[in-house]
Amino acid sequence: MSDNPKGICRLSVVAMRAKPKSDSDLTSELLFGEHYSVLDEKKDMMQIQLHFDNSTGWINKNQHTPISEEYFNQVNLSDYKVCIDLSGTIYFQKKHVHILFGSVLPISTNELFKLEEQVAFNGESKSLAQKREFEYLKEVMKKFLNAPLLPGGKTPFGVDAGGFIQQVFKVCGYKLPRTVEEQMKSGQEVSNLDDMIPGDLLFAGSKSELGYIFLGGDEYAGVSGGEVKKVSSAEIGDEQLSARRILLKKLVPEQA
Image 1: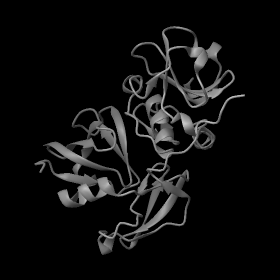
Image 2: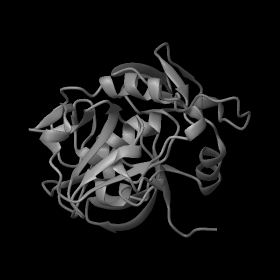
Image 3: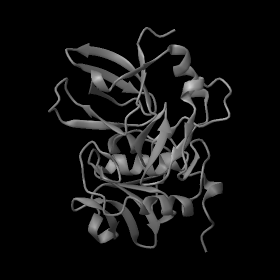
Image 4: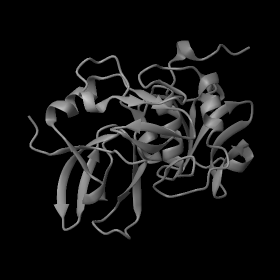
């Protein structure tokens, strides 16, 4: 049994800060339905560790919703839905809450739900655990096109390279770390770049913030020039390139 208090996000989006100050740099964001452990507390700030990717940051105590260890474990075992609309509204605990793409919805067949947790949501969603193929991933990726660069962000309204990759794959049923540097060690290595298939990840540099999703041909998608857009290999360059495969091979359409 863990001694760390547990919490869950019940707001649309909550800033996770690098230091226990409200004006500190953004390290990541909490979306509605994401749950976490509390690591430390200082004045009006609380350090948390997100369960999904183990990323850490400081949030305001007023934005913390406590849950029991039992409920925390229940969330871990439940196959919840994930919101695939850019934005929407969920009716939760007798009030309407605005939510964003990637939010985790407490909708499940799990009979252990507390009565007050029942919700109403009429938007588009899918099972968080259901793994999808490249063509689906490509459609998800389009929701981020032209999203502005926001260091620490992970929504279509502001995102960094790691957040873009992580959230696209999250909706497709794959769990990836939060940062590009960590993602460079995920999945399976593609030793020869000529063997890349759509859905593979391409990274430039050994510890850079440059990560892209290969779309096929000479087309990639990633954060470039201050926004998410499609780029060519010439725009990426050829310095210390490496590739990783995340999608299950059997779900990737065969190449001609």
